[in-house]
Length: 77
Image 1 (cartoon, rainbow, N blue to C red):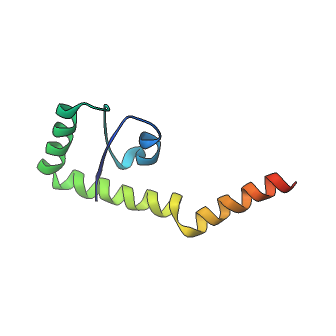
Image 2: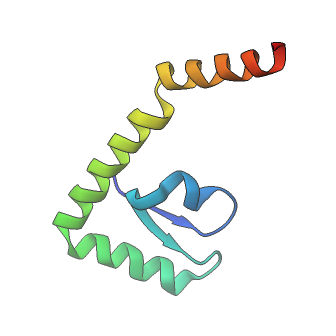
């Protein structure tokens, strides 16, 4: 599923190149991004593919467990 997010907080970092980012509170920009996705099945597929790959690489149980262990190691050494 492709993502459209705002440019606030950590959203751009989380989305990366796997979605479209619009200015926070800019309804016309949001509408344009959604229209762009509706008009382009290829873009929807590509962003969806990137999003899945990004989520699997950054937010899998294994990756999160490794990050947690790394924090514990830094704190305990």
